[in-house]
Image 1: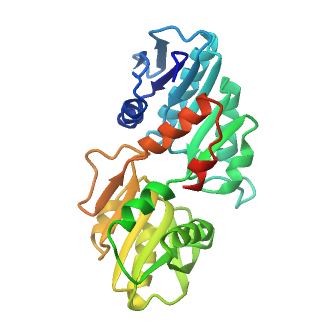
Image 2: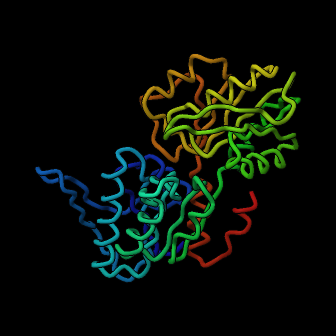
Image 3: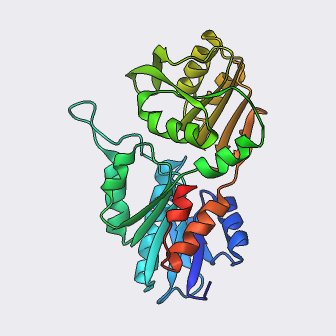
Length: 312
């Protein structure tokens, strides 16, 4: 890769940025990030970005508002410093759950965030496993979308488990679970779920035969853990001999990990799209997506197709 490429890291997930830089054999760009006494964010690039192709890595995870605002300010600073192309690398896209209106006077914040990123001056976005595919259409700038299915199924296949069945914990997760089932050569089951209010879910029915099988629940993220716990309990109730979970993003809000620890889930597999230091359960296994993002950044910088990455 040539010297016109620079990778910068925001505050949210510097460890992943360092892993990507190590994989690409480049040094992270130097940028000063701090807060003023009143809480406002300050950004200053400590090296020239004029005429360069720069990539800003920032997951908009907790604290979402601080991390999002920092990303926007980093974009603005790079734009004003005459960067040639600014690509936002967002392993976890916060506010993605609010992708449509379910009540008359609700916002669509997934679209609002896309607008903010564009208005700040970004030229492109690279993100992974959005909550809903329609968010792809919210961007009017170049946007590329990665999937954690490759590294996650590669790890899971090494276990050599038999009699597997993938479970979609709700209808919206069916496409993702079907892809995992295809990669691992397994059957598919679907849970019919209803959500009476935000962050609460109830299992209505389980479609598919899980008795005597090793059930693998596949989802885009684990937030409060309600969907995961309910799906696992439904699988166990219907005769599954073991339950595993694969989720791209480990949000683990509130008491999610405590809820998961209380039920017989064998292992919860997530990626490092969100930093998890200090809040892990013994059940949680973290898979790195540094190589996935590194390969994508290399392809984007060299104007090569991402198709081989997307197929993985």
